Amino acid sequence: RRYATVLLMGSTEVPAVHTPKEIVANERVVWAIELPSGSALANVEQRVELSPEGEGTRVRYTIAYDLPSLTARALHAIMFARGIEATAAEALKTLDAVALEGDKG
Image (tube, rainbow, N blue to C red; front, side, top):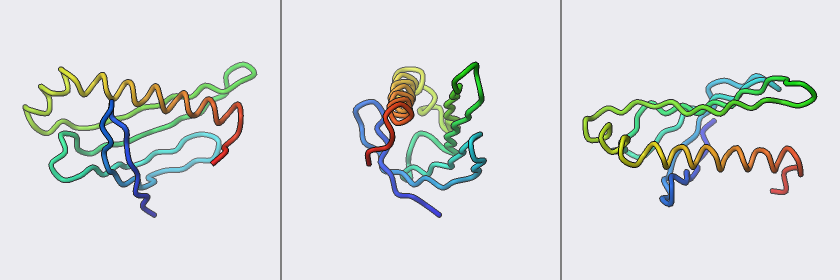
């Protein structure tokens, strides 16, 4: 199954398609993410891993991607990395809120 989504990268909304690659209940979810043609990022994968820690749960959020061109690598060094870090931080904040308050959507 494929899901049409919109990623917020910094302040830019980017249309995407998320396709589940692996789902292991209470352990991990891995998504392949397709971005529009011409995107600077390729082979994007988003991974959320859960593991017990004390009386709670540790969440590890990883985004992996290729930078196929020299221009993409230069832009990544200048601005993409910070935008992706901000996106990851916001996703974890949302996950934390859902875990504490429940999904209201």
